[in-house]
Image (cartoon, one colour):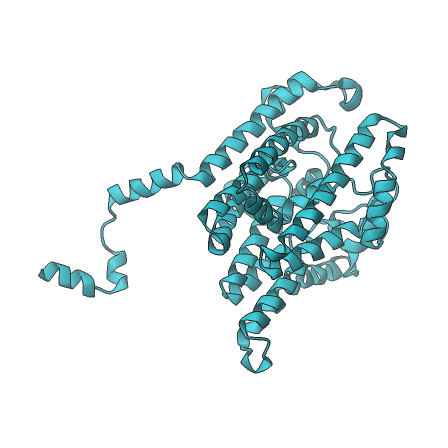
Length: 410
């Protein structure tokens, strides 16, 4: 009895010094290893490796992508460094450059992802290309954890498990394996939303600020932050506290990058001016979507591939719009606000020289976390669950095989 009394009265500091129960530790490790999150994560990573090898070995078309020969390791890694990933690797190895307005330059790519890769590579001496993929995959594991926590808090464990699974098999989820910034942005934005709903305002602002310095869409996290803060304080300014200032950290993320660019180039908006090198312009979202839908028949003029690509991009946009409309009453309003603002921003910057103005939308839609919440709630109907799993997993396998053959432009 005396030992029990002392145990109950012991301070937290002394509790930390107690010997670790190896049995308890092993139970925790075993539980984590058998958890849904880790099993889904490992299964999808294995699937991407298999699709990388067999996709190139069986589908490689020299007429489209060249007749270079690759060893086994090349099949597994080299093919993932394509388009934006090459820019990120250049930033890691050589830093930022700016060639002036209208020219493609590294400053168009926000700094947190390449900076994370650079920092960890410097500490571990791991090859930069390998570290870039490790960061992407570790970040996606973090995104899965935060998605589980957020959805469990809002909707319960069953919906949370479905949301994590649906996110992992989204048709363009292979970008969470590739050395792109999607995984890191997804983790940071979901974490920020989670801490907003938990009313931990400083953490919400910190994660939101890092998200804004990872992708420009992150600055829109200021909208759900403002709504959640106002809602929590009953829209009464007299109830506001010092933690309101945490919201300023979100635009502060992009503001810090602008200050860096001003010091480097003399142009705080260099990242905007460099975007025009990819022939992106600003239009209203409805104008862009209407034009893109009308251009689908014309996209087949050169090759049926372009028409099919246009149909997929536009179809995913329309599906996401429909899901967000359906979810207006079933997910928190701040999530809907953030998603529609993000979607409008994405639709406002088409590629004007392409038969597929929304060419990269299938990748951009991947980071709209509330979409998975709506899908997970609809997944309570078995027919919807089976339909989504079959179509999404099939699309993911197809698009992965195309991407590693450099035949999917996104």
